[in-house]
Image 1 (cartoon, rainbow, N blue to C red):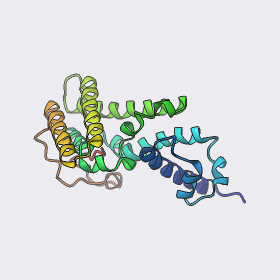
Image 2 (tube, rainbow, N blue to C red; image 1 turned 180 degrees about the vertical axis):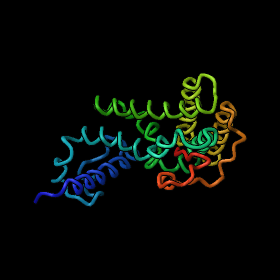
Image 3 (spheres, helix red, strand yellow; image 1 turned 180 degrees about the horizontal axis):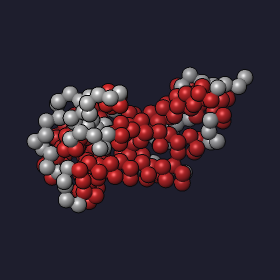
Length: 222
């Protein structure tokens, strides 16, 4: 039986979603195609209708992770107050919630130890995803009037990434929170956004697209 292209696209999306979560939690070596297909509610026999191999699945899953996590953030770079978006990004990135949920979090810390298991295509997609994220931060810093925004974005994100990895390696929750708290303070002070109140409710992008007044503050996923 042949299915409409929309059905095939939705099925592929389900596979990528499950693979993305499994890779971030278990590592590439421990992820089995059969288990991914089962988690997606599918039989393993249908796998090759969507992907040429496990390496192909993993490479596309890497791209999916960035799309799933950062699509909204990257779509709002030119909307609202850039200082609020910067502060909100790092508040979320350096949070205990992000520490505790790698399966839905930033793919970079999860994949940094997986480079040897990635194909050339997978490494390329990881590199482009990371570059796109840092370029997005650079754009916000440029709008906020930060000097040398590219250098500032690289330095701030590198510090945040390192702090998140350290917090995840720490078994003591109080120690982990302290690591994240100090990094939040350091990064936000360096970028001049320590005084920004990120608790103000933000309008959704859908409301803005529907013709509503543009949001005053841009939401940033971490």
